[in-house]
Image 1: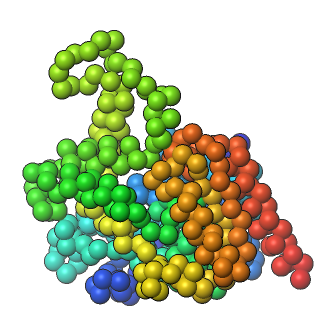
Image 2 (image 1 turned 30 degrees about the vertical axis):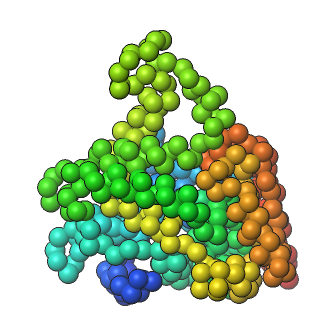
Image 3 (image 1 turned 135 degrees about the horizontal axis):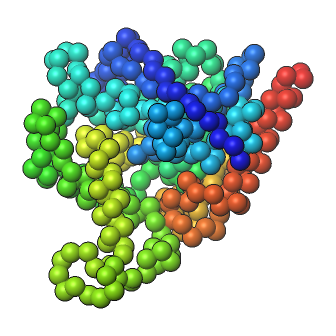
Length: 380
């Protein structure tokens, strides 16, 4: 299917301080975003796509000066694709604290004239959602047809339904969870410790030293990447294959899986910011909407008004189907309208980025329903 083609990132500056859950505030910040498709006359066909840990506002299409930089969900968003840009006006927003253009640790703190570095405030999923709402206000979008995301993006879609229940008609939550398990928090902390213990980290102020904590970033990515794959997918791709055909009896790269992980780590360390990694994994850890309701998720979701689609994948052990079912049950107890699909896919957590036809057809059918509702609204 065709892509949305060449796209251009846009930026929007906000002078009004953004209060954060931590009690801090962020002033004079910028959000990067991209849009695809056309906003209709009554502004009712807008869809917000929320990104996961290492993604950005670049959801679909390519850049004229870098045609190899394809949007991270280009298989999902575009003309004739499940989220059809011939029908919907799709927005991708880069979250604050990121390293892809929105204000983050590598940007200059106006109060000091130096990069924020370790001084950038800790942000949460709820902070991101409030910032996204401000950008929607500036674009004149009072209500989204849908807010959608996978993994950490799914947390944002869920948070939208709680924080701004009247501002979205559908919430599409894919391969996500209502909170991290202790095991997930443990994986995140191991990854953070790899960065924090890198001598080149310099307490988060490595910019001033002209270095990058590459070793810490490499290990952090390797740890994280293991959790995105299933045992079956790793066995199918790599098995116990030897890179050079025989054992080397050393501590270098013997197995193909080692080579693959090191490649992923090296690539990640070239483009991702270490402080951003710390911030985003902490946002993952902190997300727990039930916490303020006596750990009762049903109470936390009682304020929601949207209709929901939840999708999980059988081999996703990072955010297992049981966690999606937990959300479904809490919504059903509130008598919300919920569709749920559990896809038997071998790819682990990364399945939400891939093109399993059952998954794609599920999302396509749901957006067909959203489109039909739009037609009915216009007819009324």
